[in-house]
View 1 (cartoon, rainbow, N blue to C red):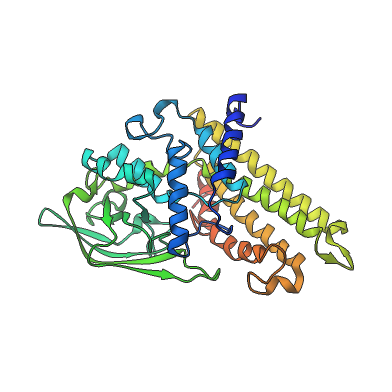
View 2: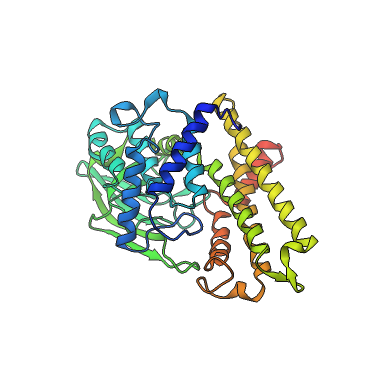
Length: 394
């Protein structure tokens, strides 16, 4: 058993696996973090989110007064839920930004904010998007230029955000904006809750090379918000954002499951396609490459669980997450690229008409590059590992 997975936790895994099998929505699997393609799909995802919260499989770390399990909740349970959703190729619940903002509100929000938003997040009725990244302020988020100026007891917000997943569907946004340009950049940022239907909010979907529009640009043109939109104190946005992101630890374990699942699909693919007139799985070069990729995935899994063990002992290292993120991102590209090599000429046709599983590998390949940028680019991860882990000069 990995990472303290006791008999009790393995029984919990069996329970979760059964729940996911019975209740996961009938939506075609896609690579990566994706938005609903239409209103009907959105309704299914909202119901799925509500069901996971109601069963206690999501939001278990929340305080009991807001529907969670409080101190009795264990990080291992979050890991198991994420792994089983990934293993089933079921969609993630629409609670990425919702879970982030929920922890920001629980830890730093007012009673009014808690009463207004938390119940709706759990029932799937209130949907949030994350308004952090900007053109020119992605990996260096502290350089953001969206500004919020005080006005008539509230604020006026002007700027631009990008890579906003679910922006076209969200009811509210969890936004970072600069409220004080005259202090060090990390100290002049504040966190806000904004209504995405407010005058001056313009959401423009970005069509990606996958053919879908999962991300959006969001333009904020003199958007008026009340003082009650501020989370915590003005200037505390950087601290609030980082504290809410600290709750998102379990996702790294899901990544190893996702890649292990892709290696299994790669083996199936190699038994289906032909190379030099015989099944590719009979080619020693193919077998060696699959073995190499499989071993790398198991090494990633060991790295992830070692990092999570350190988290449980409160002695985690600053390089644990960057190492796991970098390895996951690069391995994802390698696996999808090799799959398309095995597909040969059919690997270049459009998804839906391609090599095995209705274009799965084309979708995996096109999305894999996104992971080398999203959540911290591979270049930034390498810099963090080099400077903070190995002590190399900047």
